[in-house]
Amino acid sequence: RTWAVDHPHEWALIFGTPVPGYRAPTDTIDPAARIPVLLLALGVEAAAHPGTGLATEDGPMPRALHADLRQVREQLGSPLDDHRLARGIAAWTSLVGTINFELFGHLHNVISAYEPFFLHQMRAVGRNLDLS
Image 1: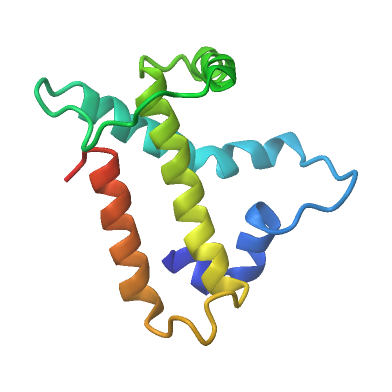
Image 2 (image 1 turned 45 degrees about the horizontal axis):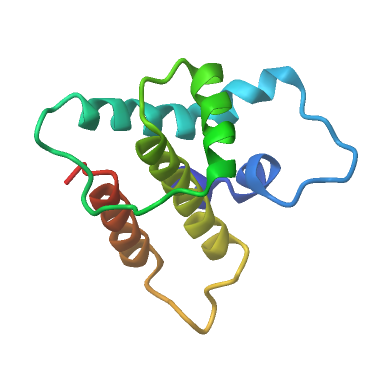
């Protein structure tokens, strides 16, 4: 978040509105992948500790989602089950979305304490990933 606030234009190039027809250069893929790779590593770490389990039960997962998660798992070589992998992807979208809402003005007239709100949101994400 700190880097994004200090470099909003660079953040927007990575996570802002896509330009129709634009294909990112391959040298930008690694920087854009840092967040999901870190979240994946945290998920693997949490899953490696017996007895931690998921914070809450997810309930049934839509059948169509399993194929997508299998593809992600194969691409990343992830050992995570579908529920943990889906939670990791949700954490990624929550992190990026919370920063985007701040930087692109969607929290104006709603939240003014941006950093405390971000920290609160990320603690909730951590609990959802069973990291707390």
